[in-house]
Amino acid sequence: MERKETGVLCHISSLPGKYGIGSLGKEAYKFAKLLAKSGVRYWQVLPLVQTGYGDSPYSSVACTSGNPYFIDLDMLAGEGLLTKQELLAAQHTGVVDYGALYNERYVTLRKAFSRFFFDSEEFRAFVKSGVCEDYALFMTAKKVYGENFLVWDESLKYRDPEALEKLRTDFHEEYLFWNFLQYEFRRQWQALKSYCNGLGIKIIGDIPLYVAGDSADVWAHPELFKLDKELRPTKVAGVPPDYFSETGQLWGNPIYDWAVHEKEKFAWWTMRLNHALETYDIVRIDHFRGIDRYYEIPAFAENATKGEWKAGPGKKLFAGIGDRSRFIAEDLGIMDEGVVALREELGFPGMKVMLFAFDGNPKNDFLPANIPENSVCYTGTHDNDTVAGYVKSLSAEDLLLFRSRVAQALQEQKKFIRLGKRPEEISEALCKLVLSTKANLAVLPVQDILGLDNSARMNRPSTEHGNWCFRLERMPKGGIMHRLKRWIRAYRR
Image (cartoon, rainbow, N blue to C red; front, top):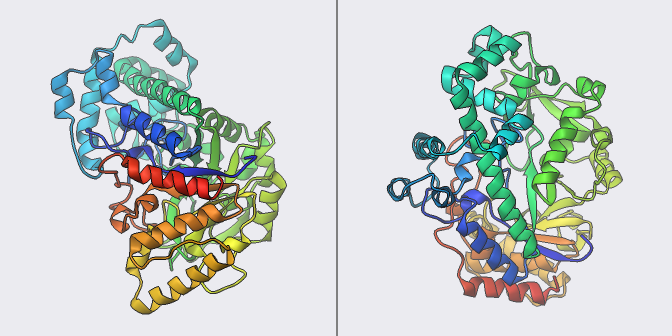
């Protein structure tokens, strides 16, 4: 990032559209065009992976998969794979209903697959490449046998080669179906990414540090995780109590056996990072602090209060990556000198969140005056309240204090930014405050640009239900985007 630029955070699932969830179709292209016209040069999305239990993009069935829900149905119809009647039956409005999607979308996608010429040379080459082999076998077994892979027949659970070949052969059409989904997803994503790049927009993607326990990743590479002989996790991931949760966050992901990774020269991680670099222009590494030191919790703990800090792999994790200039470190939460030194040694920009700035501490790292150039500044992340939602949650006394601290920061920035009283006006002021900082990249969540309250919040950490459902009711209007363009010009981004 050689100059000050602006980004917008909006996950694919949050785009408007007719089919119950945002897709890689025409609405995504419209959104990219709106961003470009407004002077936005970065579009940040959450992980694009296929979600599993809990619908979180940070807990996937396979870390290099693409979410089949994002495959655009109109594009499939354009290939002759779906009928008008099937498109009409797939229509849903409102927030994302993952239960309905799970029950209905795969039925629609199977109809598309039934008409797909899967003996084409291009598709055969895709399958033969093996890029989705573990995923396709895992999902085939899931469909046939159901349940967590831990309860499958032992020959399949422990991946006996004969059992895998029997699965691939006996259920070959099912195996090809899951390959088909990844084939279509990758084609559509690469087309959208190429379009964005052609508009001068770079895509910021997200790579979670951990993978889900019930995933193709753990099933295919159990030696890389701290598991018992039955392949059950002995330690799980999370973070201790912090400003997100009083009892910490118990994520439940299996912990890596970093000694084994190092012995294998981090081959699996190098593959994963290189895949992310191929998928996105810039990669945000979620929970970067776990690479320096990570917090492991006994597998059957009720919360995250009784974990233990352990040394992570550090810079050795990136030894096989030639270009390190395309990473962002999500360095939020409990920081220490070690993780700061690691981030600085690698040269990765860190993250600054404006909603964390106003605690009255003049040395707060998130205050505008304390934000360095080599950083990415946000009003908030997918784990935060929206600005308007946060303002609405404050008592009259706390709101008065918050507004006074924001006003002081505005004055120190020597920028004339009007601080109104309504929540959406305060949201606009904080957006401008983010743009006014020295940070090379300022990223505004689409909810804060629109001044939406917490009904538009994406995720509430430590809660299992009701997350990841936010969708735009319609594409942002031209007037709103023109206003964003004026902000960007005013702060010379």
